[in-house]
Amino acid sequence: MLNENIKAIRKSKGLSQEELAIRLNVVRQTISKWEKGLSVPDSDMLLSISEVFETPVSTLLGETVTESKVDDLKAISEKLEIINLRLAQRKITRRKAIGWLFIVVLAVIVAIFAALIEFNSSYLGWDYSDAEIAVAGAAFHAFEWLFVRLAPIILIGAVVGIFLTRKKA
Image (cartoon, rainbow, N blue to C red; front, side, top):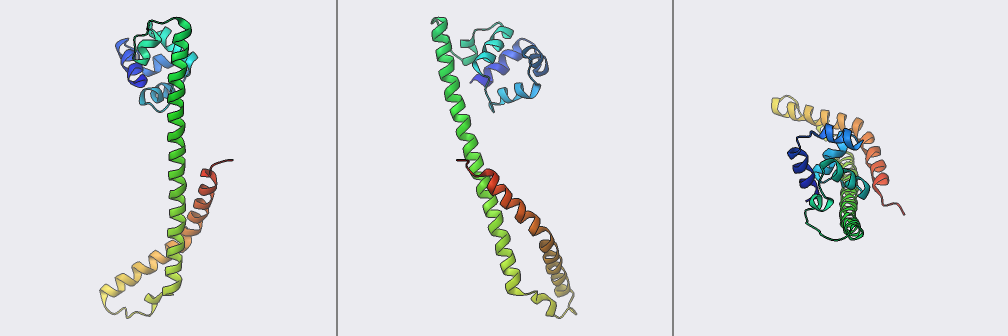
């Protein structure tokens, strides 16, 4: 809701993301992240946005609150805390998914290596007088040649990725 309100009010005031970013002393990408809901401004920045838009913070948050200033700040901080917790949970989930992706890549590489070792380049003994067999043999050889050269690099990348996405204690 906050992201939609920032975008709608910015457009209604005739400001581009770049102009708003200059007025708030942030980069344009920060405004873009706020409007996409990828991050949220902290309470001080929310007050600055409200001043630039000449709009109450409660309007930015989507409510009409007629409480005192202390209550406004308390409500804002509670809402920002909830938003920050959701963003943190989303980040943890994304990190876990990427970690599992690296593990799957690692397992696939190991499985392909095991298959290549088991088959022991059996295509080398084929009769290549038939054109279809010759094409299949060349394709197998190209795959094996490319895989053996690229797999160690991908394997190292997957192992490094697993360690980088691990939960830090």
